[in-house]
Length: 117
Image 1 (tube, helix red, strand yellow):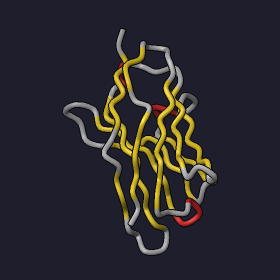
Image 2 (cartoon, rainbow, N blue to C red):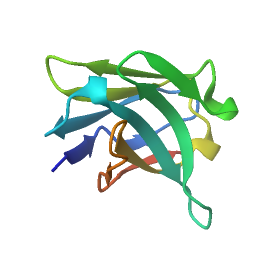
Image 3 (spheres, rainbow, N blue to C red):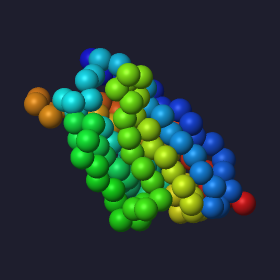
Image 4 (cartoon, rainbow, N blue to C red):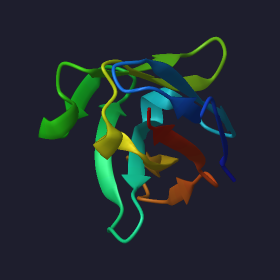
């Protein structure tokens, strides 16, 4: 069983930065696609960024050049560094893990990011 716990959300002004963390237990990053999703009020949940086996990254177009996903294997933690934040980045951000071999998937409970002046 994989457990994911997010932290690092909060209120930030436009143009500011935040780093989200996802502490993962029961998983080895080499066996998983780790991802961050977000869901804004009234909108569907969308994929923001993913990292496969701790190496290959993918970003949705709206965050390319601003967000960076990374993993720390020693700490079993996935990060999402968010720079140049915009009001439209306001959402609940969720950590997600999908096993490459059996397709089992897991969600964290989310952390709220609010970008506002």
